[in-house]
Amino acid sequence: MEIVDVTVYYLEMLSPSHRTIPAPCDGLNVLHIQAPTVDDYRGLYNAVGREFHWLSRRKLSDAELAAVIQHPLNELHVLQVAGVPAGFAELDRRQPDEIELVQFGLTREFIGRGLGKWFLQRTIDQAWSYQPRRFWLHTCTLDHPAALPNYLKAGFVLFKQEAVRREL
Image (cartoon, rainbow, N blue to C red; front, side):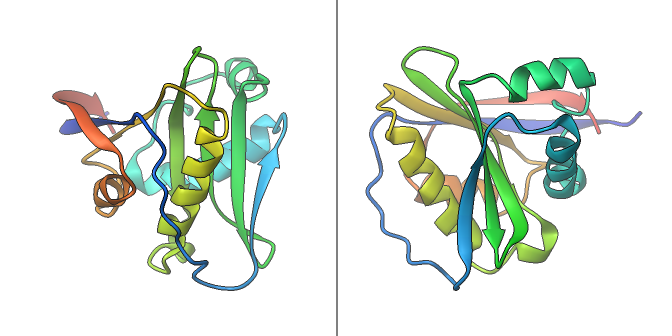
């Protein structure tokens, strides 16, 4: 197991960002998957996060993961391009008055097409439809280089930053 130094960025949004991002292509659809299966979720999670060393959900047993992703206040939104899964967003609404964007990303073959900016705004709009006090997320230096700039351009503000050592 390799241990690396990572900077973690915590970002929040305290009011909706009202951006209009035009769809970068035809055939876009966002599906809200209610009670996803563990296998389906792990497939998406690994397709999006493997190269960025996502760990949190990989460490959970199937039963632990099912309890989280099938909770009625945990939402999975899958971006499809012409019917092909291109990425996903996971919203955790279990804390009163706040929503966490737990996971967000695209699969490798769909990165660099303007989909991330569009899908992030759709996700932001979805989160604010619940009228939380705060919408927040964290990202880190292991994530795609466009992640932090994309979140900042979308209206998130940095509220905390920390250096950690973590496994890959």
